[in-house]
Image (cartoon, rainbow, N blue to C red; front, side):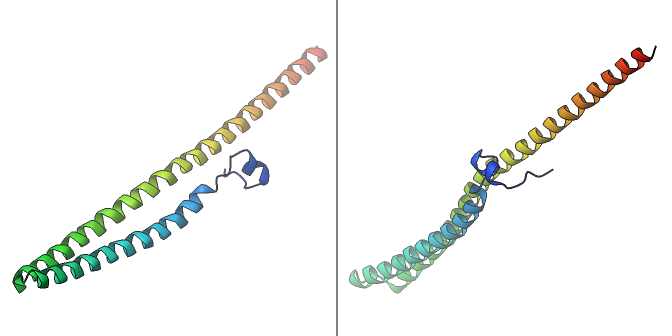
Length: 133
């Protein structure tokens, strides 16, 4: 049974808003990380071209360096996005665990109330049957 999202649950921290915010931060972080990587890659290629011309390097060395920059950028892209995703998933996981534990707590409380109610009814029946005798 899912917990209702009320202001009471909000102020007692039983309803968490952070997982939704983390999803938004994930997208923003993904965009910013990839833009920064793109800028670094373009900067690295431009620097290699400028330095290569200034030092009068062979064209093959310049092209090899540019290919190396592109390969490293691709590897960095994959690793960086995986790490960012895993970080955000960990935060969401903590809040999901909190939500599950809150649900279990609510279920246990309901079962305890139900058990107490049944015990009370059984005692009342015992008293009623002993009064009839």
